[in-house]
Image 1 (tube, one colour):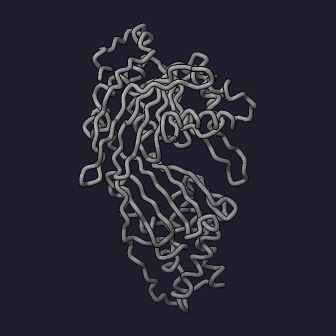
Image 2 (image 1 turned 90 degrees about the vertical axis):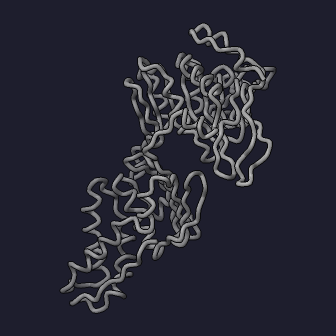
Length: 427
C-alpha cells in the first residue's frame, strides 16, 4: 500500500497542511487545462506546480523550494500503483475510484489493499502516466486511451462520467512472449489444432481470431503471425501497437486520436485504406470495431489473402453478426445479403477463444466459413472444446475433439503444398 506523505512544517509557510491540498487541487485543474507537452511534460509539471502554489498562497514563502519539491515528488509518482508496475506477474491493473484497486495475476482478479489518498492524487497519477505521451483527459474530454512505451494499454475515465471517482485500466505488456508450445502446455489447445491453424496461416487463408473479453485474442494473433513466411510484406494496423512480429519485412501503423484542439485524428479506417497503397502481401488489423470492417473485407476479397484481425464476440456465429453490424457502420446502404456474401467470400477461418470464469483461456472452436446457403452463411466446426464440468478449483474440465469434418478448403491447402493427415480430423 502506498504510504501517505505528511507535509513537514516549512519555515515561511504559515500552515503547509492547509496549503498543500489547495495547491494540489489547483494543480489538477491547471494540468487538465493545459495542452500536454509530451516528452517535456516534466518541465511543464514544474511550471504548473509553481503557478498552483502562487494561486493558493498569493505570495512567495521562505520555505518555498522544499515545499514545491514535496509537491513535485507527490505529483510525479504513480501513487498506489507503483508496487504493481514492478511485479511481472500482474497482467492488468484496474482502479475503480481512489479507494478500490484490483489486479489480475495468473488470470484471476484480486482486490488489493492499496488506495489513493484522494481523487486528486488519482487524477494526478493518471495525468502523470498519459501526459508524457501527448495524451490528456479533462472535463470536456473525460475519456482517454493511451499506451506506454512497452506497449501496455491504458484507458482512463474521470468524473462526471465516472460516478465513483476516476477509473483507470492498464493492460500490461508482459515481456515474456508466449509461444504456441506455451499455450499447448497450458491446455489452451492441442498440437493438432495448433498445426492446423498454423498451416492455414502459412497457406494464406484469411483468419479472424474472435473471443470474449480478455480471452487472449491479441496474444494468439501474435503467435499465429509467426507462421507467415519471412519474404512476405506485412502491414499491421492498430489503435496502439501491441503486435510484435518477428518477420523482417513489416510496416507498423498506429491510429492517432485528435489533438487538444480536436484536430489531426487518423482512424483505423484511414490506415486500412492507406495500407492498400503500400503494396502489402498481408494486412493485419489488431482489432476491428467499426466501419473499417468493410474496408478489411474488401481487401481480403481483392488479392490480400492471408490477412488477419481480431473481433470481440460471443461465438463464431456472433462474430459474423458483429461483422455485419460493423460493415453497416461504414455509411453505405448495402443489402444484408450483399454484406453476407462479402463476408463469406472473404473469410476462411474463425478461431474462437474463451476466457472462463476462473481465468482459464482456451481455443474452444476452430470454425470454417464454408460459404452461403440461401441468405445464411454456413459455418462448420473443425475442432471443439467440449466441457464436461469443472474441477474443485473451478477450472473447466473437458476434451478437445475434432468434429470428424474435413474443411472444404483442404484442396486449397494441398495446392499450396500443405498436405494434412486425414487422421487429424477423425473423431
